[in-house]
Image (cartoon, rainbow, N blue to C red; front, side, top):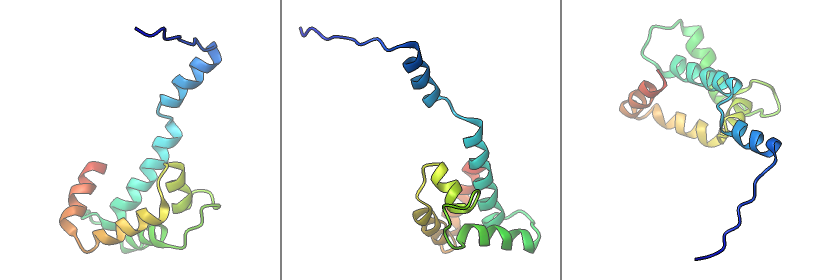
Length: 107
């Protein structure tokens, strides 16, 4: 049997580790913003055309990660690759069944 040594961290290290596992409200808010845009852009709910157009422009516009609350900025703060996410969302337009399945997870 090995003599494993356990390092006990300071209370600050323990708190930091615990807080990194806690879901932050800001992250929940960003996830909700992204989910709402996806539902508005692709959902079957009756939305005004300008809402659908706005959501699609936000999702598929130029990637501007330095601009706060842009699609790319939100995606990066959710640890998602904005370009890959855009490509995935574009592929849903050609596969409505998969889209409906995924949208049901957001609701």
